[in-house]
Length: 395
Ligand SMILES: Cc1cc2nc3c(=O)[nH]c(=O)nc-3n(C[C@H](O)[C@H](O)[C@H](O)COP(=O)(O)OP(=O)(O)OC[C@H]3O[C@@H](n4cnc5c(N)ncnc54)[C@H](O)[C@@H]3O)c2cc1C
Image (cartoon, rainbow, N blue to C red; front, side, top):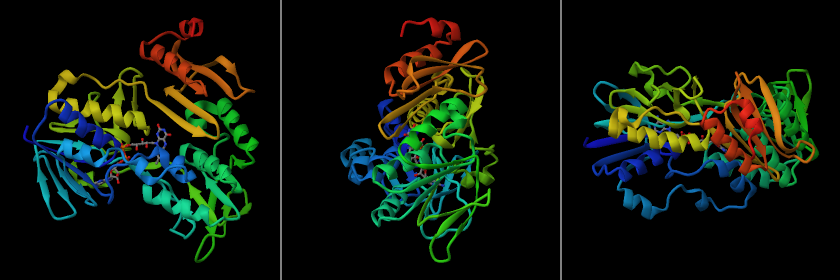
């Protein structure tokens, strides 16, 4: 193999590049990204950067000397517009075509939006989004409305409250994080937000925004109107696969890989954009978490270099979220869980761990300020332990 193109210059793409070098690949690596910046970390965007606790430089994923060491051909501010799968060629909007021997698809995802663009209405995915929201917060808005109480919404609401802003959070489900942790534990998180004076509106959607030049409020589906001068919409993401539309690949909800991350001969995928069958959970999944971008970027690079000997990609997905003084962590998959038990602490103190079971197996663990428990039960999930054995384990 003489040349590789990595499309998507972010976490999965950079980790793939590092892996190629670590594994001894010493020929050309192109790193193509449509953002104007070198790769940066996204989790601090809703936390330290938005709070003003970190300078932007702290979010870079690698220092300039690291790029010298990796000797990458970087193409920042350049978008891939097409992929010739059989010819292993990527067309770029700069007019260039990269004909290579291997391709990593790592184009991630972007935010869903609601309605037409309007001043004062934001989404949060990029560094520039975070800078824009921070400037809007600095202008001391009277009321911030957060739409969606998932990852982004709940963290932005927490950060905005810590900055002393008046926050309303609107969520269609009956609890924040309901999809990932279930209604009962989501209700605990709802209480934490209420304790921090977030005006939480659950079980209701947004029908539109008011305002001509700039947002003045949010209309809800129950007929209520909330005045707002800043709105952050966090209603999920869409995988960036438009550039693959003509490629013939299956791009339904992300690009489909086999269970080793291979998309087609010479093409692999990783991170938020990739969908694959995870044998360990017997579930086809697309995972939008930081840790998966790292481990899948690493695995995909090895799959491209070493072929099937890289093996199947069977991680136990894992995420954390920081809200107020709680570090919330969830490892595993709660899809279709049929049991849940608290295994440490108690809900009242907001410090606990609980495990989820499905079909007699432990499939997930949730911790609120319980990192050690999450890591230990995660090892039991990895090993395929039964729910009862996990309950009886001395952890
Ligand atoms: C605000 C925020 C907070 C988060 N917090 C957490 C957290 O606390 N815990 C956690 O586990 N996860 C968190 N995440 C999720 C985590 O950051 C993502 O899972 C991770 O960034 C995915 O990495 P990726 O490389 O797959 O994709 P991305 O980071 O989305 O990068 C893909 C890159 O490809 C570029 N691209 C897209 N299309 C093209 C194209 N056609 N040509 C060239 N380039 C293209 C994109 O612009 C982007 O730069 C957070 C995400 C955000 C946005």
